[in-house]
Length: 198
Image 1 (cartoon, rainbow, N blue to C red):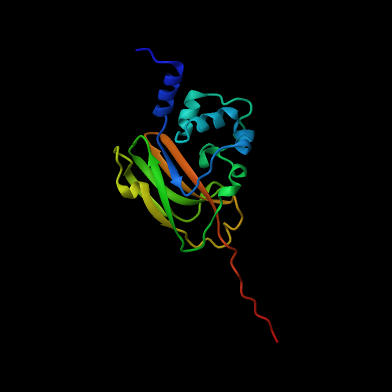
Image 2 (cartoon, one colour):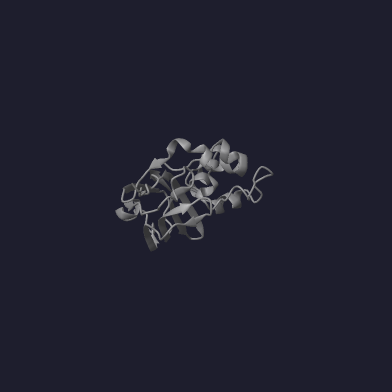
């Protein structure tokens, strides 16, 4: 039996598909991402939204002149830009419990966590909210607590009051493959008490 070009492309996409957060809403690529990451990158992830940057570089060793690595960090939210995702910003406060769902298409034993990440510095604030030090998604049907779990929003002060600054980032490193999904969120500004003299 002979495979058509379309069927072959479908098999390639399936081979590169592994995992993504499905809830809450995560960043997706659009025009703002294309402007700094290039059309090749956006087309790649729109064809397979569960893929990973190492596969992108393998398929396209040079991403083209419209890829700007200084503005497109493929290892922070896959390079997806906040400008494409302003409608999906969640509002959380300290102590809120956030239910998360992950779709694992192809298992790869590895390490995973969910952290609050400051996107302006690409740094984790505090410690991971939940983590799996090993054996994450090692089997075809991962344990339920690896695909349906909750995290609690920590005290963040005023660090996450501006939309686009902070994300909940699900990070999974398995067999040299990096997966990230980012949920944009804000927290309310803290109210300081002022003392007035009579």
